[in-house]
Image (cartoon, rainbow, N blue to C red; front, side, top):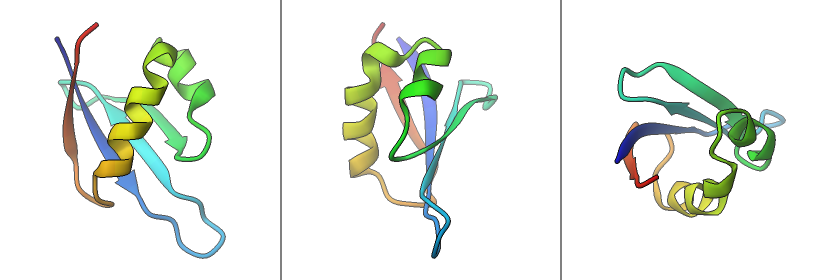
Length: 72
């Protein structure tokens, strides 16, 4: 089981919402717009988990680091 940490960052005015995806050592793996995750997730090998990640992101609050365990 892999453990990731997600942080959803709320944009203001013309700045869009972003997401930080970090590993167990808290190393930044991806930083992407919430409405355009495809390229970033493909680059780190999680393209097949995109729908699952987006569903999880819709349930977490902005500004709070949240742990996400993924079976791969």
